[in-house]
Length: 223
Image 1 (cartoon, rainbow, N blue to C red):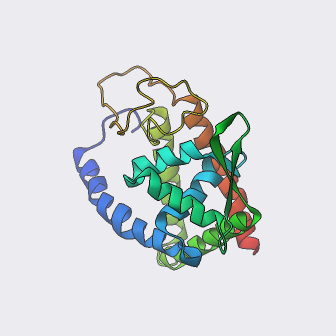
Image 2: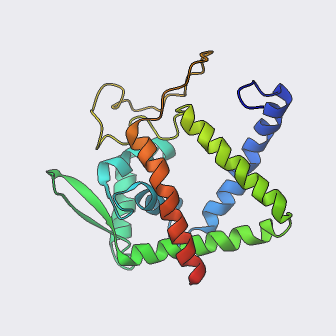
């Protein structure tokens, strides 16, 4: 029942799913998305721009840098190389341009070719998922989808850190917390009053990327 602490055995069952979902199934899906010799990092860059960028087509380079540095524990030079490769032939998936508000900043724009490749990635995602879903009754799949939606809603309501704290600073003030080079784990408290909502930028991202992906998925299906 909502509002009560779950049975510890249920939490144990969930914990047992972390390894197979995150590392076995998740990495297999990442591999399936690697079109045209793209690296995992380059695949993530396309997802970042599409799901969290301005209109799903543009994102400040420094924001991409901060996300990737936190997620992949990689160097700035490695990210720079990944972006330059994506911008050069034969890929031409992105363009690097000067940021309109700062000559020192760069903006990453997804090209028409990049959007096509993203739709192809979604089609491959569908191909990856279909045989798995075919082995499970439709009703159980719908229950699973409903569960995951509620899980994500709970994550958002509790303001669990789903993005690196120092990742997006374009629309936020730059304080000491925003400039940290490590991602802090969320602190668990015993408070019973309503938890604060996620920061505005995170909430916007979480709300916007769903409708954007739904539109892209429909386009991928039509193709």
